[in-house]
Length: 295
View (tube, one colour):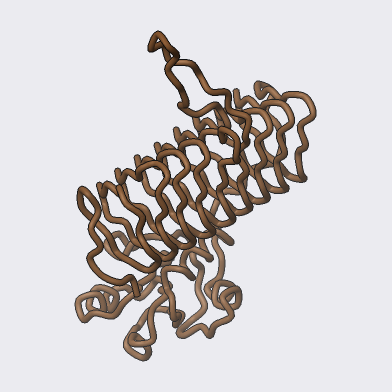
């Protein structure tokens, strides 16, 4: 369904340059269509040349493009961010709230308004789920888990099962340590498909507000992840590790149990973090080495 370019500009609180036109579909600059919406997050002559041949599109661009384009455009300080906002507002499919017939809900469960629970998902006992949270298909939420508002839990994820904790007896046989803590998840958190978050042993496993976790991530018992951090595919965080605010953990990185990674850090792809890292650093390698400050 088309939206007018002027509606997009008004939604972003910005001026529209050029003629008002129908915007039919978001697209990439390499695959533009008539009525498409694109963004350019930085200026280059080559991208200007590509865009100059496209008159029947709408673009969200930086100020360097002002006066140089024949297409309709909106000037933005952060084109990619504004593009994402427009997609969410006008083009993203809106899920319908409700509980699927095949879902199973335990006893003493508190569900907020407009919660979505998908096919074959299982919600344990004494679980709290906040307003507007979507839980997709085949998800398992363990007993006593708390999930805040406006979260997204993707398919096949398991949250709140026991972690891996054993102590050997006199005969060397591993004895399981009961896990009595919970998983506590804040608001506006996204957790990817086939991710596992273990409940705490005694203390809780905590995921704070605005954290984004990719697919196939493992987070062990008693881990703390600070606000706004991002954890990317197949990362592994061992027990009782503490991750600060606004930190990025790259794909396939591993974090040793009990250590701390500070706030505003960038941990590169495949990094093995074996020692505590301070705030505001870029680290990579096996074992991790601090490369520079993260400005």
